Amino acid sequence: MGAAVSIARSPLVKTRSGPIRGREYLLNDGRVVDMYMGIPYAEPPVGKLRFQKPQPVKPWTEELDCVKFGPRCPQTDEYFAQFLNIVGKDEANCLTLNVFTPRWRENTEKKFAVMVWVHGGGFSIHSSSNYGDTSIARNLCVKDVVVVSMNYRLGPFGFFTTGDDVCRGNLGLWDQTLALQWVHDNIEAFGGDPDNVTVFGQSAGGASADLLAISPHSRGLFHRVIPMAGCGECDFAMRTNESQAKLCREFARYLGWTGEDSDSEGLLHFMQAQPSHRLEVGIHPKKVNAKKILKLGRGFHHSQSGNLYFVPNFDGDFFPRPMSELRREGPRKPIMCGTTENEGLFFVALGGFQKTCEGFRRFCRGIFRECDYGSDEESVRKDVYDFYMKDVDPKDKEKVTEKMVELMGDYAINAGVMRYVRKMSEIGNDVFFYCFEYYNPDGFGFLRFMLPFKGATHCSEVRYVLGKGVFAKFRPNDADLEMLDIMTTFFTNFAKYGNPNGDVSVSDDHQLWEMYDPKQPFRHLRIQLPMPAMADDYQRRRTEFWDKIFARNRAKAML
Image (cartoon, rainbow, N blue to C red; front, side, top):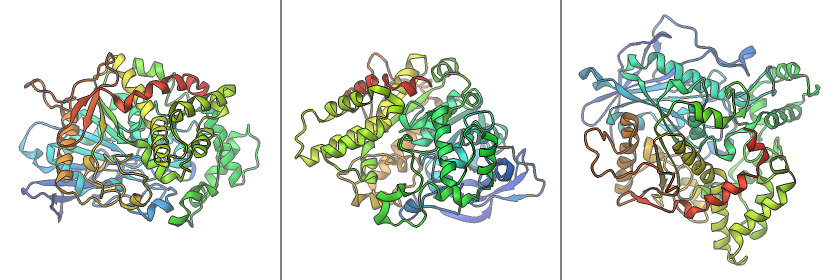
């Protein structure tokens, strides 16, 4: 795993934006990966450009030193900053990307497949700097791919909307699209193949990858997609235009706006005039310590916003037609998609939910809302409670906790991913479906004090793809290294060939990972040690129940 960051500069690359120079990373075998970091791809979204679509960066003529990550986009993560590997400072001038490319491309005429990483964080926190540089070089680039990571606007900066033409919103998705356009226009200069680009991401990044594959503004800029533990079908990933606009108006009133709801111009001008720090602290208070994690919502609160405040919305612009129509009309792309075994474990640990039957009911009241289900609200809550708790002894706290974990994982992630996999396969996409089950019990960092039990959960798989931990620093043991090699091989094979098994044109014998078949809807690859294997009962088929529940969601039916 070890290697050294050289003080030597990388070769000059002449991009369409201007000349840049990065730094080199020396691998143990003597090969070099060039790292170009903090490359501007858009004009700073400040002043009148705040809450506007990103503008391409103005070209420069002098050589630009690109040797470190650019600043993070403004965000509120005071709690997470105490525990996660948060890198860099917040600045509005944050729209940068990073390119990690093998130097040995000079010895071959063939261009490398390109992998573009979109980070997660609930559309609210994190940046590309949280997910690695040297770890990407030694774990992904070493397998003959070029990797790009990007920053995009978050929270209200990225997903504020007035609900009309004044500000349609989805600015974070427009940022991602402009970054992909930059990749398309420039990646060949780094040895990458603009005609073989894979977008991959986890959680909100996985949802972004899927949404980028849907929109006619972005879907032609890449060719394969890997949504990890998140997609556009997940409940958290998309909101109606009307409900998101209502939330944004209430947020503005929380900050002091007193205008009429119909005055979209006035609302936009008010928000553009606010100092960045006010938009950051408006959601959660700044002075928060670990003991007060459960009180993070003391700032702005909207009872009908679900678990996240600022998310993509069905705006009629980035998404000009209904989502189902956009899925059907889009170009077919190979897809690799999946979840971890216990997605809900992460959310139960951080959410501080009372692990009792009453706590279960309280959670149901929070997620099944009248704005979504109308008069069917109470009936839905009862059906969900009965499905999970029917045979559970209320005094058995371990069993109640287990059911809470199942509920949160199914509701937030699993059910949406299952629908996505089935839909995309039925309309003709090659889909490879997985469930990641491996975990190192010593790899949870601060979460170890909060988890009711240990298992593969939300974000667990990321360290085995990028080589960098989300919860804690990644200090791999031998089993970790074995899983790291398995996962990076699957991912780079998929990027290069559209199949995680590798180049099947050479040989299709002994393919470990079967393509998804809608006739066997719960069949998937269990990723575990000593060897991944196909299995038939994804999440014990609980997602069948959720198809019936979401069919009763009036708001989702409008998307």
